[in-house]
Amino acid sequence: MLKLQRYHLNVIYKRGRELCVSRAHLPTTYTPEAIEDYDVLSDALPNLSSNTVIRQLKRHFAVHGIPQQLMTDNATSFSSREFKNFAHLWDFQHVASSPNYPRSNGLAERGVRSAKHLLEKCARDGSDVYAALLNLRNTPRDGLPSPAQCLLSRRTRSLIPLVPSQLTPRVESNVQAALFALRQKGKRSHDKSARCLSPLEPGQTVRMETTCGFDKLATVSGKALQPNSYVVQSNGKAYVRNRRHLLQVPESYCPTITMSVPMIFPEP
Image (cartoon, rainbow, N blue to C red):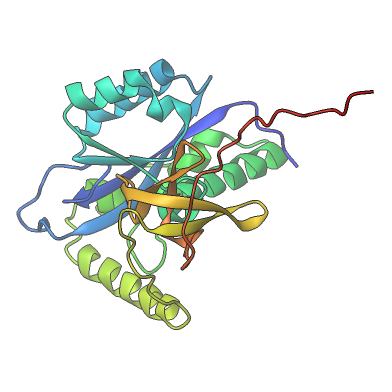
């Protein structure tokens, strides 16, 4: 297995009301209801400090514009005071995925996996990583145009020979319908075995899943900022957990109170 020497920041682009980084709104393609996912950037970072991440994000925002919404995981670089100030000053909404539930940020997780596979192949072949990234962004996928065409409305020139007409800009007007059809197909497959979980109310007793199973009793405090997540209290500590990690139970929860009991020894 290839040991990665650098960390990678994956910036996921979406166009519409729920987006991570947006291109300019085109009257022919933009609707507020459109949610389109583009995985187009994978940047190597020397470290994962908040200052490094913020500096890299500013570079992308300066080129593509400030997003309306940025979704990340719960890494310390995104939960720091510096990043909160950055989101406030640059006027975008920061949403973190549910803790211990990477599926809620699946697009970024897939991007990380694709970047790792690409680096491994380049290390084996001795090929240029940046040329491979350029080809990846010019490759159509899932019956859709390439990420470069979806984001820029044109192919980007690469080392692969193309006729000049293929580099002519053209607005891809059917991308939204194709993405919606793909999502509906995936949703139908998922719903065959899925079931809806009932919402939880404040004060309700639940069992929280840990590495040993649903073995920790907790009380629901309310909904969290993360999608489909709740804040729960257990033994004086607050946790944010996805609904799938909380099991509704009929039993009541009382915090454990430890009392010191004096020991009486018989006189000799």
